[in-house]
Amino acid sequence: MLRTLGIRDFVIVDHLDLEFEPGFTVLTGETGAGKSILVDALSLVLGERSDAGLVREGCARAEISAEFSIGALPELSQWLERNDLAGETDVCLLRRVLESGGRSRAYVNGRASTLQQVKELGERLVDIHGQHEHQSLLRAPAQRDLLDAFAAAGGLAREVEQAWRLWQELTRQRLEWERNAEALASERERLEWQLRELTQLAFSADEWEALQADHRRLAYAASLIEAVEYALEALSEGEGCALTTVNGVLARLGAAQEFDAALKDILDILEPAQIQLQEAAYGLRQYRHRLELDPAKLREAEQRLEAVHSTARKYRVPAERLPELLLGAARRLEELGGELGIEALAQRQSAARDAYFALARELTGRRERAARDLSAKVTDAMQTLAMAGGRFEVMLHTLIDGGAHGCEQVEFQVAAHSGAMLRPLAKVASGGELSRLSLVIQTVTSEVAQMPVLVFDEVDAGIGGRVAEIVGRMLKQLGRRHQVMCITHLPQVAAAADQQWQVAKRELNGAVRTSVSVLGTEQRVAEIARMLGGVRITDLTRRHAAEMLGLKL
Image 1 (cartoon, rainbow, N blue to C red):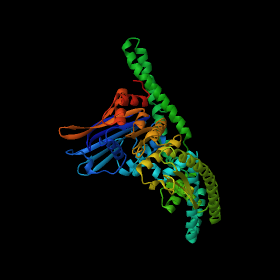
Image 2 (image 1 turned 30 degrees about the vertical axis):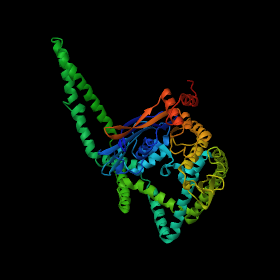
Image 3 (image 1 turned 45 degrees about the vertical axis):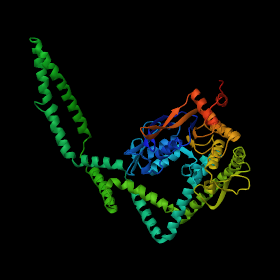
């Protein structure tokens, strides 16, 4: 959900800091007070193109920031991680700076970002209904995803896409083989020979380190034996060796300490030295037993080293990279069709195609059933929203050869009134009709829709009375599952909201400014009464406003 929106020096707003609540919030106020400016500011921080004229007159720059809670959107958190834009846990902070000279900068969680990144992120966070360029429902992928979610087929759709990509990759490999049959056959023969030789060598990175250590030890065995024997002679086995000398010193000082206890401190220092000398001598004897002059083993190690070095020189790689070369050869040979060549590749391609179409047919069936259900439900709801006689249809246009997203293209079409022809949703002319259609679709699919924040502008255009009351109820129902905001002039819609904000325009030192107030109960009664009664507000009007809010005055 949207937590906060901060606006500085934007159009006629000097500064606003807004904190949002869950549920359904309405923005009301006099015409021209600047209600749409808030939507424009939100659009800009979500990636909309900027204009230098949006900076408040006399200011160097405008700044807009928005903080979202994304704890319930794991896929969005993963997107931020992939793009190196992650911030605090479960928080996404967007900031947009517009300079009076026309330059614009965007930031995500404090990191400079491209406008495309911000726009892609914004499309996952907020849907603004009433302005064509922001509505996800006007985009074919969003329509397809919404239908799949309504059909509980999102997982199946992903399987279809994976199956398609496997089939296309195998097709690419087969076409490559057929175009370059002679060259690929030669490459395959070379790889098979290389694979046999490297497999026969049976060389690993672990062996390389052990082999070098063994060779050094065997090659210098004579020198090692000589050094060890010298050390043993000096420490414990020779005449006048170190241990004999230290033992003698300990014995003499041990007897002498009877006459002076101060010698005990010296003995305490010498005794550990005696123990360490004994342990060193023992360790050297054990090491000497393992050392041997073994020309046969030395020759064996040298031959193995020579075999490894020779193979590495042949393939012009360091010896330690031979195992990597083996894996690469095996992978490439697999791409070229394995041991059976083009026949095996053709079989795999055919199997992948069959698997794709089996999954795609299942997806088509689910989409067809969901399309009929969604079309009927949206059409029924349209009859209550000043679109009597209108129709909504989810069209499935067949793709004979299939595609990454199945064997059909999904398109939402609508006839806004009786006698009108069905047209793509993206070509509906009336902003009010489009906004109400979006409201209906979002309400019908609210249990499966993923968009956390929905903003409705122009939703009340051309309606009133009973229809306005229905719109208000629908928005309130939608607010139980999403965070919903609506700009409205209709008291029926405003009365249904969980929260109400009043947008007002004021003059300060000759300059016009916009302010926003969160209305309490009494203030809501007064504002809805204003919306009902116009210039003169009577007690009857106030009672009517209170009744709409479910209050008793």
